[in-house]
Length: 319
Image (cartoon, rainbow, N blue to C red):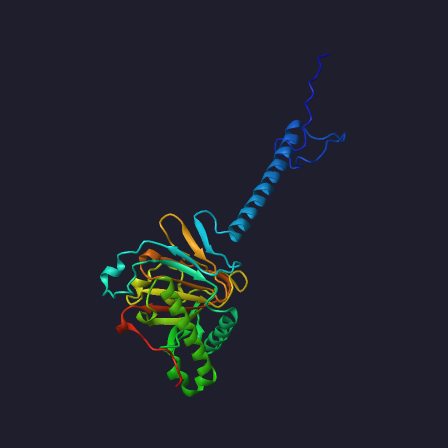
């Protein structure tokens, strides 16, 4: 009698068997080598995926904490700086404007100091800013309060707060607030003159000079897009020296919002610190931008000076 051939039993999990690779045979033995290899491959993919995820998270937090390659921190938030000056070659921008001997920049650069305005004075100025912005504020991420002109962000526009609120405004912003502002402005003027070897009397306050409030709200108008690179001397022809006084602390009151100088080889940043004064010559030797604020609220004052007395403005006052 001829021997009848017997078909080999199909191994579960092979040839499209829906039983899957983890099902055992009737005898309790595991599946084939191919099935075991499939399980090993699957576990390997999971392991490598987990490792890559861990690496990605590590890189994210590293970049979050540190500026990364190509960025030099000129002034860390946690460092109290008496005075730092960084010299840069002057641009040709000043050649296109009327020159004033003893004032028009011949020595150009950027400086940072925490020794001119105290944190207590900065906190008092912060209260002035908060009081002013309580009367208005932009719908977007950047609000402006100008004590000189009265310009105040309101929704998507600006109002003149002196006309809008009239005498009632004196209950919010007092003559004592104006006096503090004038004292701080004068000290900043003297510090700029000392650093750039100028006669302080040759410097004149110029517009616009304002408090700023920045947060992570979506921009509603072009005025809210504060993060674009720009040159002060190009944007405002009267500017010769620009200063910023910070009223809140980077990475404590807000994140993002660092001030970045854009240079040919290596960008550099100033991390805001309450009472920190940063100032620089206003030409294209100091192209700069502000990072987008990612959380919290950043407060600062921009105070700028011109060498041209025709562009000078007076201090705000109720008297």
